[in-house]
Amino acid sequence: MPHMTFIEALISVFRPVWRPLPAPGPDGFIARLCFAALALSMMWGLKFQFDSQDVPTGLAHFVDLTFLSKPGVMTWVKLTFAVLCVPYVFGRGLAVVLPLLTLIHCGVFAYFNSQGFKSHGNQIISLILLAQACVVLFFAAHRWPKGRRFPLRAGRTRDSYLIYFSQVVIAGVYMTSVVSKLDVSNFRWIHNLPNMAVQLVKTHRQEFYANPATSGITREAEVPAARWMLEHPNQTRLLLGAGLLLEALCLRTDLTGLKLY
Image 1 (cartoon, rainbow, N blue to C red):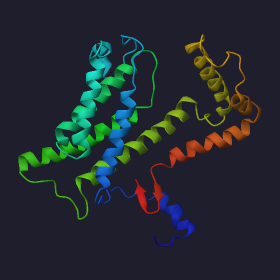
Image 2: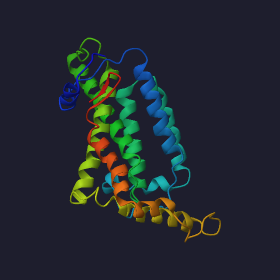
Image 3: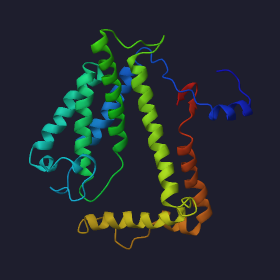
Image 4: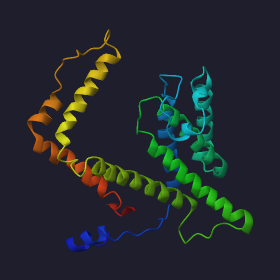
């Protein structure tokens, strides 16, 4: 890696290069294998608490997804998702497989988020699937009328674009987090960070109330991390505020030559 001065490195942060990078050898296979394992593992343990969608989110605005809570349905949905992951990992039939994976994942977690409790832990996976589905459909749409493949630059493959647009989605999600935090807090997010102590106490209480008869903790038990935040507000702002900076810099991250733009 060529040596850069501090000023050159600083300038390079604000000079993005918007292009896919080569993905030689098994890079694409390994990326798909790891991503499929992550998506499948998070879906496999999913359980619905209710059989309604009282607070519709996403697809639930347009489709009644309550059928997913019927006995046996999610078992088949999970098995179908697992079966589709096999050709996905090996890069076969992606123009069909990826849209199906995207539809299943978006539908399941839209229903999960429509029951009054929203979790943001799976949106990024749905968005990556959606981006990858758009890539393979674009490649297919280009090939069908013209009878030839999309012209790739030297060293680039379809995997280059799948990985690239997945990285774009990841960067976009983190930037959305930055903007929403600043917007909702009226640019006082870092100043308000010590108030996160309240959320820690609420999480502690939720753990107790979820199973009060068998819980190993009491409702009034001390939460050391929450007390530390209240007693050290500036250290809390410095420690947790660094996370906002990392999110804001996600559009340009260099790791030993691997550029995630």
